[in-house]
Image 1 (spheres, rainbow, N blue to C red):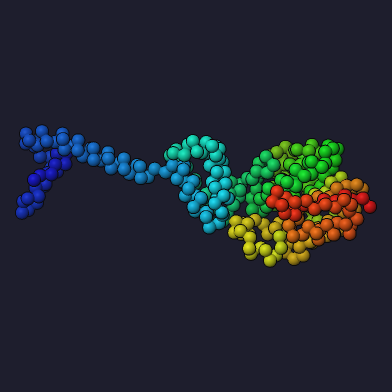
Image 2 (image 1 turned 180 degrees about the horizontal axis):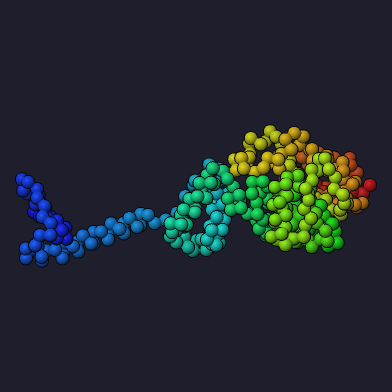
Length: 337
């Protein structure tokens, strides 16, 4: 039996010595047989190509599932799904509903390479906000990097609390330890307060706060200051601070994406848990007006201690306020000596 390969090579497999003819003139039978043979080869090649194409095809739905499964060691399923939804929103402009409708959409090579790169960083514990270089806070997009904390939902509650209680626009506000600038910028944009200022000990974090204020067109006076050794010159109607409050013994138990990537100086005072609260209260008469209001964000286990400190320093109407999860998260007081 002879095998035909489009009249280029003819092999006699029954001969004692296999031989090959090149460009050999075919017999009448060969000329009649060739079209069928060529058609068979083309059909076989097309079938194999289709199989390979379907095998290599990656769709949105399958990649989302892959991403969620890959993050199972770092996040619970709900958090992993939130990360996946946000990633597809950022990269493809797809809402959760649109993602469902386009679940079978095929990803091209560039999209796959981009997603694989992000997934590689995510599985190493790097937060998505740092990978994307931005974070959403109170409806605004803030630039972030590893020099500043990623804004938390609880801090959005702090901003909302202040906006609900401080309703006059002629107030002046100071945020101590501003980080990315999310608190004073959101307050300025939403509350339209006459004067909003923010201080920060880290020069790199301060530059980020200034950049965010510029990008969001918020008139916030951001200045460099170590509140533990220096005192702001002006007095304000409202003073707010979300200082480092994670207990040292808690650091090792924090999630990898927090403890290995977010700035430790902004997470914990690395010593006395009440360090910043005590310092701010000690200089409060120099930085707050009579009748001024003080707002602290706190560790959930610090409520009573901070309340006692505030009363000891002469604050009135001291109040511990819970966050959305029912945990003690904020303490409020009025300076009325």
